[in-house]
Amino acid sequence: MTTILHLDSSIFGSEGQSAQLGQTFVSRWLEVRPETRVIHRDLAAEPLPHLDAATVSAFASPPEERTSQQAAVVARSDVLIDEIQAADVLVVGLPMYNLGVPTQFKAWLDQIARAGVTFRYTETGVEGLLTGKKAYVLTARGGIHAGTPTDTQTPYIQGIFDTMGISDVEFVHAEGLDMGEAARNAAIAGASSRIAELAA
Ligand SMILES: Cc1cc2nc3c(=O)[nH]c(=O)nc-3n(C[C@H](O)[C@H](O)[C@H](O)COP(=O)(O)O)c2cc1C
Image (cartoon, rainbow, N blue to C red; front, side, top):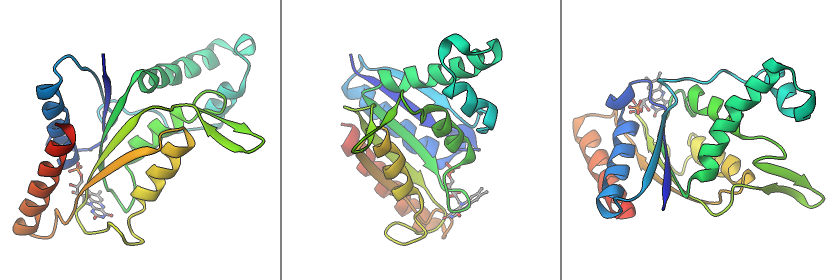
């Protein structure tokens, strides 16, 4: 059975445009493949803590030497890693806030990017361990950024996903959402139609 990991991080919950794009994708996918298992995580509704030294130290400690507090910290990360390991397909609704990814999404990445677990260092460089997955990243942006230096999201996501072995990443950008009603409607229609194609 195929498993989708569906991530949201709009601070506006299900009203967020990126959340609606993600929902469009998953609904269309399920119409065609109803037997799919979907793991949904709303990272804004249930935020993860920011990375700190205690967390990094817990990750680096051998299991038998962890304190109970460190074991709890690692257990939280393990749950998130189990979810992505189980997924064949990732669907990421990704708002642009202040030219970057939402802090809640970054906090999730900081929980799952673990040396020795989701990637490892080798003599020839970094090797990602989350292989065999396809990711769809559906962005929502007030302005227009794709193909310009202000699109920090695309290279960042490509880089961090690739580090963990996820190299098959498809982006759909809904842009110009704050540039007037006509631009907004056209962007949503274009992105939704592309998403329906990809999910079918
Ligand atoms: C706090 C905040 C910061 C934003 N920063 C940017 C930005 O830097 N560039 C941009 O194009 N749009 C920006 N926007 C507009 C959002 O990208 C747009 O509203 C988008 O729909 C957000 O996704 P969401 O609706 O899923 O939350 C910002 C919106 C908010 C609320």
